[in-house]
Amino acid sequence: MAALRSRKVVELFYDVISPYSWVAFEVLCRYQTRWNIDLQLRPFFIGGVFKETGNKPPALLAAKYTYAQHDLRRLADFYKIPVKMPPMERLMRRENVNSNRLLTAVTLDCPEHLENLSRELWMRVMARDQDITEPASLETAATAAGIPSDTTPQLLSRIRDDDVKAALKDTTNQALAYGAFGAPTIVAHIEGTPVMIWGSDRFPLLAHLLGERWEGPLREMAKY
Amino acid sequence: MCRYQQKWNIDLKLRPFFLSGIMQGADNRPPGMVPAKATYMGKDLKRLTDMYQVPFKLPSNPAEVMFIKGSINAGRFLTAVDMNCDQYLEELTRQLFLRIYYRDEDITEPASLMSAAAKAGIPEDLAKQLLSTIKDQAVKDRLRQNTQAALDHGAFGSPTIVAHVDGKPQMFFGSDRMELMAHMLGEKWYGPLPELAKAKM
Image 1: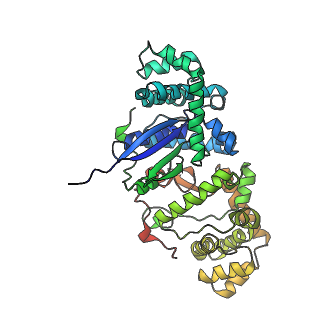
Image 2 (image 1 turned 90 degrees about the horizontal axis):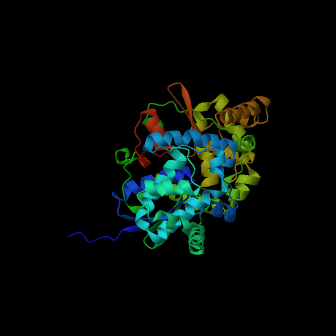
Image 3 (image 1 turned 180 degrees about the vertical axis):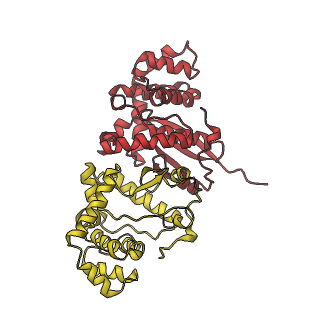
């Protein structure tokens, strides 16, 4: 009889304003049913990571922004995720943090909605070029994600609460402690050691380190 | 790419360029200048080279190797070889990589370049003659042209791969788009293929 292997914890630190974070999120959501992993979603604040590390948003370099537009188009097709690089004005809005605070409130109060709400926020900002900063936008996203409409006003008001702001800061600091400098940041806990991997292009390596098999994009599991 | 040129229906063209010129042209900075990135790169390179079975060891002073000593002479030497006897280009490239990124050896001095050339199988007289041309205008121009060609494709770093698919150039940055490139080329990705490795420890 095979011994029951405990699942390996894989933390995904992500910001919904990061297009590559969406790729990593969908891939890991698909693979959490294939690999013996316990996927833990950790919405964080990329602005805080850039500030602490001295790293700059890659989009600020014209050649990188142009490249990312092509790269994401190809990845969208390869992974069957409708991701598109948002226009600069949307990318750089300070108020994007509201989305991450909302996700943090959901993590604290009703984590069963975290996956769906994360996906819905990405659909807004990356697939449909829609706002994710205004209360009305966030309310629409919450409802579309299946959060009961009688609980959304209270959930939205939590964005301004000190415990929510502190929790977002705390998650961001956890990522920084693992050596993060960008998004997505994946931390796989392998035999008691945290292994930090940056980006959405190390899945074959992650599989290798987890002792699992990389089976490619699994487009048949796309939610679109 | 050297392994996959044996598996895929591709014509691999090696184009040595000058990374400092790319950084300048794209107004980019080496990633290693952000401390958290430098730390990550060291770990990432070790894990990747283990998985791909590429002999690799970080130099004792990576900043000196990359930012101070640089690669202009090595780049020009590779260019001279490319222009005159390109059958040696792949192996000379490999030997230069093994020098800095496996044995922590210099690649800037004439003696270093001659040693790499010898290991690459280039006859000594030929190597000496090519080394004497590295300051010639034709060699400088060719290296500059390769660098500019990469910039024209939108390059901002190294490696830059340009796959010509259905008459359209598809630029890929980095060494981690192989599976996607396979998909676009209509080929299959088989993973690291260590059995096809030519770089030996």
